[in-house]
Length: 85
Image 1 (tube, rainbow, N blue to C red):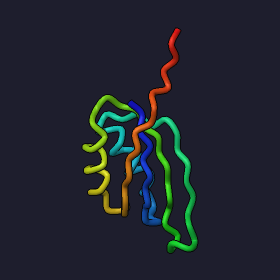
Image 2 (image 1 turned 180 degrees about the vertical axis):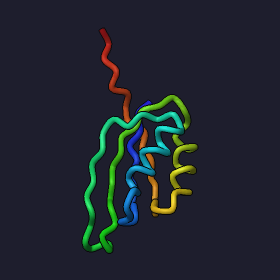
Image 3 (image 1 turned 90 degrees about the vertical axis):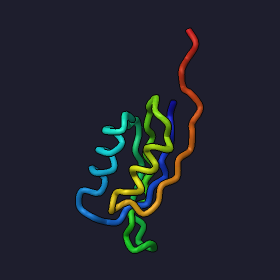
Image 4 (image 1 turned 180 degrees about the horizontal axis):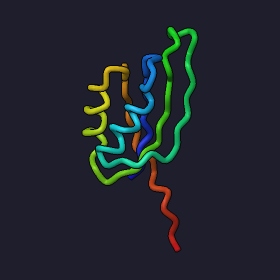
């Protein structure tokens, strides 16, 4: 199953690596990433990360909320992109 994570990260060195690392250790493979700092929001990174995995997304959300640099996490399930042959 594919999920889109909408994250807000503090502008700290290594924050993105920590988020990707937690995702991978929880059994999710990063598939796409998009984001940028928002000057109007004290330079916080607003990030969209697409991941794929067989585990429940709720477990990933709970772990990401424990990452110090991660201020918010929202998960959206995406439609399966499998093609029928």
